[in-house]
Length: 222
Image 1 (cartoon, one colour):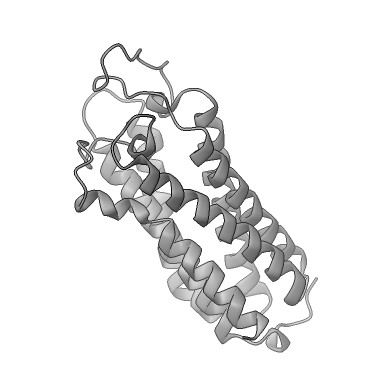
Image 2: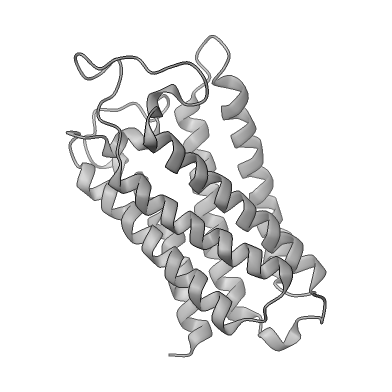
């Protein structure tokens, strides 16, 4: 198997497995997809937590491997180096996410204290940090590769459909950031699922783009 094909398979699989949460629709998790956060699926003592936890661990591992291969076999331009490096950070943070789950879910688990106010109160403690780093890292990955696709004249899939998916992810992220600090029910669970689904689709596109576009077609920009 050629290394570029291997890269495409690894990155594509990472994207698919990052949406392992869709299994909640066939498994009885006891959580409302419209209002629960995805990190609650693998909270300690939740049913099927290992299924979702291993989905994140494998995703993170594949992202780390994919980042290393991407840096090794594709032309090293300033933007792509940042993009692959951020993708590696995303992988490491996603693994850390799975290894440091939240202990309980306020309002569902008896005796579980309410989290502090602010962004995603259900995810307070180290899990909040790893989750935030993972989301920030994949955003950096998406931004830098979108810019790289335009600057270097390559990866047309990321210049068009990839950009469209990125816009959807950005809108849903804004939805979560704003609505989480407002009174009322704004279906934050739905917003996060759209956000993560968009990230998954974008990663699959990155895998396809890495396979379909030969490195020699890249323009010689730094």
